[in-house]
Amino acid sequence: MSENPTAGLDDTVHQRHRLGVLTIAAETKRVEFSYLKSALELTAGNLSRHITVLEQAGLVEVEKGYEGKRPKTWLHITGAGRAALAAEMAALRALLERHDSRQNCLR
Amino acid sequence: MTVDPKGLLSDLTAMRERARADRRGYWLPFLLFGLITLGATPFYAPKYCVPNGQDPQLVEPRLCSWSSADQPWLYHWLHPTGQLMGPVFNVHQPGVAADIYWIIALLCGCLAVVQWYRWRAAQVGVETPTRVYAQVTIFMLLLQLIGVPVLSELFFGRVGWQIALPVTVAVIVAATWRVRKVGFTLAVLALFGLAHFVTFYPYGPMLVLATSLVGLAFLERSTVCTVTVAVFAATVLFVNEAGRFGFYWPQAVEQFASTVLPASVLLVGGIIGSVRREAAQ
Image: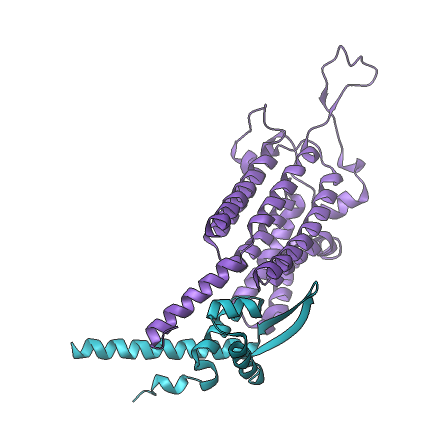
């Protein structure tokens, strides 16, 4: 029997907002904190907590700086982050395929 | 955001597409390089001379005669196997000025594009990675300036292409083998091949521009950007090769058609990209 696709889901990455952070970061060289806040419709505190989890897992790196006088926080995905995102997406797709094939069998 | 896998995947796809659309900024590089291509026009204009001792009022000027032996050392360095010239290729006289113009313009253009994407990132919050674009541009310029001339002088010119070509290919394959990607090895081989064409085609530097814009299209992942770059690359091949297939520009436009046509493609692509961005906002 093949392994259940849920075994491929990583708790750190699977949380939907963290998955959103990684997806946007993977599409860019770097992404700014306020862009993520607006795209994910999160409060600054909530987003900060998610980013801390991802940073501690080595999936993203955070760079703080200034744009003129305004402080800016940039985030970029690491190689481990890209690999974790790819594995998570593959697991989600496998889960979906398994679900769809079960539905077809029941019909 | 939804929690079922199907909804989650479609939410993530929508987020990725939004980030991609927000980070795009190809329209400005297209406008910039369109103007740079247009600016090259005077360097390809034929020069007319009046024979010595004749009254310019009475004699119709003719195309100046030239010899590659009269060209400075830099010309021979940049074109080790000569250059395709003459009315067939719509370029009547060789000149090192066009080479210098293109090298400076492509280098400054590359720096401006990288700065543009950094500036744009500060405005919108997402930055397009420009490393591949900058690497391709710098690599092509280095090949044109150093790689091909040195290889021609020290290797191809001494042992003959029959030996030098397979050895060069083998060395490139061995040097790129550690990456273990066939696509990467083929890309490096293609860049070396293209750099050789750059040295003898009359509008060779436009091939460097087309190659670097392919790198930009790869990063941008936009249909308008990809189509514009494909049409530009085809146009560059056309202006370099048209004469060989018996195509000649009408005399009224031949002085500028070979630069204005590819420049127009970039300018139109840039304008379409800019209008689409405005419409999306």
